[in-house]
Amino acid sequence: MSKAKRNSGLRFQPAGGSRTPQIPSGKKQRLNIERLAGDGRGIAFLDGRTWFVSGALAGEEVEARVLNTHGKVVEARLERVFSASAERRPAPCKHFDRCGGCNLQHLPHAAQLELKQRLLAEQLQRVAGVTPERWAPPLSGPEFGYRRRARVAVRWDQKAKKLDVGFRAEASQEIVAIDDCPVLVQPLHSIMRHLPMLLRSLSKPQVVGHVELFSGTALALLLRHTAPLGEGDLGRLQAFCREANVQLWLHGEAEPAPVEDGQRLGFELAPWQLSLAYRPGDFVQVNEQVNTAMIEQALAWLAPQADERVLDLFCGLGNFALPLAGLAREVVAVEGVQAMVERAAANAVDNNLHNVAFFQADLSQPLATASWAAGGFSAVLLDPPRDGAFEVVRHIGALGAKRLVYVSCNPATLARDTLELLKQGYRLKSAGILDMFPQTAHVEAMALFEVG
Image 1 (cartoon, rainbow, N blue to C red):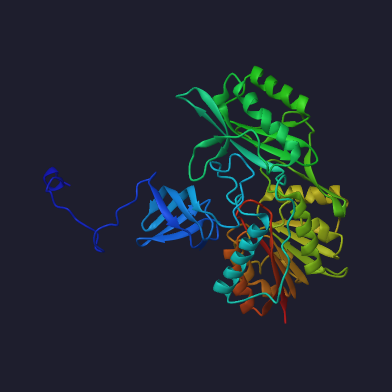
Image 2: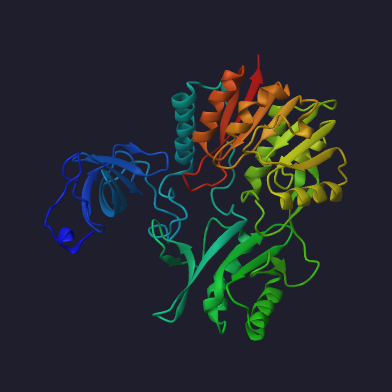
């Protein structure tokens, strides 16, 4: 474009008219909260805009501070409560007003469960037009001290020449300094308390990318580093881990690996006397108590018989497949990641289970042509990621299964896939929530489908 045209002074406006003026970040606004959104934020309406206010509860009059705006949607955070809900409680964690990890601590646990139950019911009814024949009671455990795995954010502040260690703030890249987190299992508390001082003692703390903490058959600390560690820094890390009886794992350019050869990290499935090995980076349910209750309910609902062939899709390390193998004649377990398939197969061998076979497959594609699908199945269990299993369920009726248990971490995709299963003649017999992440609005659920 020529300079003359660029400076012509012509001004254009969108076809729809003038744009809605944006509300500047930081502005404070008095609002009346009408209800809660599915993610736990309060919803208010003002001057044609919809406000989502984290930390606010239904029925409250509050002052909120704007975080950002998108057209007529405003995201904000609670600053002050003028008129409080009868349900409001003081947040047990001192970092609640800044940390982005737990957004429902101001709501009693029973009310959190009711919110999650309502969200699941609304999604099933709105998307699939269905209500289960039976609502199962929520599966829940302790509301604090449940998380056996955590990722700790680390960032070198070049201007201040200091290392920030903690968790991300809400809607921000800012790191909130935290040395005590009430949702972590007790064995991780001591590590978390001493971690900031340890990392700041390194001669080159700026090479630390992030840290992950694990509690299972052993305690472990994984340090992600963006450049090689010096001998002195490695020695400091090793000394700390030896004193704390913690495995040290490093993650540089290669895959995560323990500093000491032969170290094994795993978790127990105590009711079935199973031990599953895993490596940092593998998917593992963070809530041991709810994971156990989830497996028990899935087995009860699926009710595999000793002469049946059962399919486990998105099997991971064998969290469901190995307990299923103790009940069914044969279990076929399928996972998209080859490394996970190999570790799951090794877990089966280590637990002396020889009636379960693991396969790698792209589970975003139809299953009909897979060799392991030949012969069909009496029952199917699937535990997909957040985007669900639409391509799988589109053709799942062809496998001949009369019973299907769907474990979901996203009610929206569960509802979408439920509609597809209903079209194939399945009925939604039971459904219920799994409170895998107390103090957050994250909803996990389980649904049982049967033919006829």
